[in-house]
Image 1 (cartoon, protein in one colour):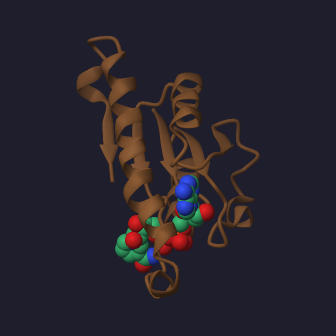
Image 2 (cartoon, helix red, strand yellow; image 1 turned 180 degrees about the vertical axis):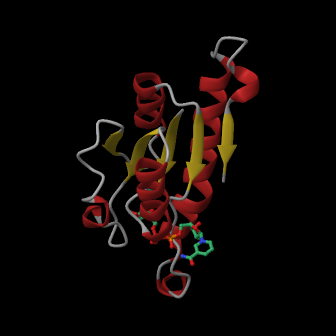
Length: 130
Ligand SMILES: NC(=O)c1ccc[n+]([C@@H]2O[C@H](COP(=O)([O-])OP(=O)(O)OC[C@H]3O[C@@H](n4cnc5c(N)ncnc54)[C@H](O)[C@@H]3O)[C@@H](O)[C@H]2O)c1
């Protein structure tokens, strides 16, 4: 299975990716914008795997997201990209609205477009976890 993980350089996403690469046969596409919260060093133990790919992409960018879907043809999505440190939202709510609302909407729309074009036998097994 090929799993697209957003926010894979973050706290939860990097643990998920290490688990997938170390304990399953699945592949991962890590889609992350690398904000202050993203750290690729947390993935050094798996980043050389031929089952791991990294895409430096902002989930707010629909065109780039669609390119990632078309290139990698994932079987499932785990959406973990977020502005997650809520105390920061008091001083700067705009980033939270962009990533957590607009970005999530973009990802869902890109996934729906991709799913609509999947072959009929692949549609029932496609999974999205947010
Ligand atoms: N950490 C926890 O204990 C915990 C508990 C429950 C739920 N969650 C939820 O899990 C999710 C991930 O949490 P976390 O602790 O890993 O967050 P985190 O802040 O550690 O990581 C977020 C990741 O998302 C990336 N990112 C941010 N904006 C992006 C964008 N526009 N496009 C692409 N990538 C972007 C960052 O670069 C970073 O790598 C959040 O929705 C959070 O609310 C976390």
